[in-house]
Length: 237
Length: 244
Image: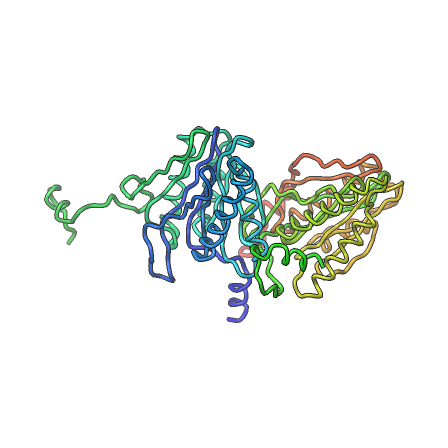
């Protein structure tokens, strides 16, 4: 009906993805799923939504793939020039502010929410959120994308200040995996990028490395394996 | 005015066409309530940044100092408030660079904001905020409001958004000239508590800010106790099963 359509057009649009940025004691962990969908079709089941801006700053992209890729391309370009002029690595704050500038000044045309995370020698590990509209918020952790709706409650309970790198990575992987379980627009593998004073580490978690949740079963090669391995009553008549 | 020169400077960073239309707010702040008291102005706001119906951000500072003599509180789109703070910081910096012993007072800031908001409204490209500006300069207290369409006025007590409906009746009944600090805080807390009960986008984390001739103080974030101990709350359907 009319009013239903209105609120769909005017309200914040949910965005097909789950992205997470988390600070820990010494750096940051960025996480994302790998599903890019066009309508109901999964155009790319192994996308990389964590994009490099500089050696020490990465960006998680959600929403329109075109918009977020273009923003990240411009910011990478500006940061490259900025690094040359500055004579040292750009700070996470500068990267985040450039993302905000583009997002805010083109707010009527862009449909992308982003998370900036990185490490620099002045402020250590930092996470910045730039949601729809171009607000800039420096946060201990933040969530984004359509899958994030399912994670606010989880983080309210599971998040702690001053986690170790292990704890932070486990939290991010668990969270993205939980979101994938319930959000149709999120799926595929879990990717994480950990950034600290020592550098950047990319990790890849395919299905077999992720936990099973409610009503999910362990994947098998075939029913035939199940039949041959188990004894009475394998088939329910 | 402001945005014209901005888009010319950052042509790579914003659209060439420069035509923008009325937008929609995404991350929004709820009510701000303020009143004049004996020594100056008291202003209160919660720290929520809502994203539609989701209470997404819970530590957003919606009250900020401006120069030496003013406080600004904003409701509405947070990204536009952040941009307004950039404009104001630029004004304050330029004012400081004159190095002439003068400084922008609340009246001047209020006037500047009114012009900015009204001119944006005329271009159908508003800054989606309602702003409360409060301050004290040379013993003169000032409290005013500017809306996204450029409506502006001064009053002894002001509230934005839901606060207009829930807090103003309380303020009209209980505000008087020369409230003490304690009375003012208690009155604001009464308003904020009512908003917490009745405004679904309110969040139980507040800051109260004070501005006097001496300067600005913004409290640390704190939460208010709420009262649920009514018999009628415990047993709302006693005597009328199926009702609510």
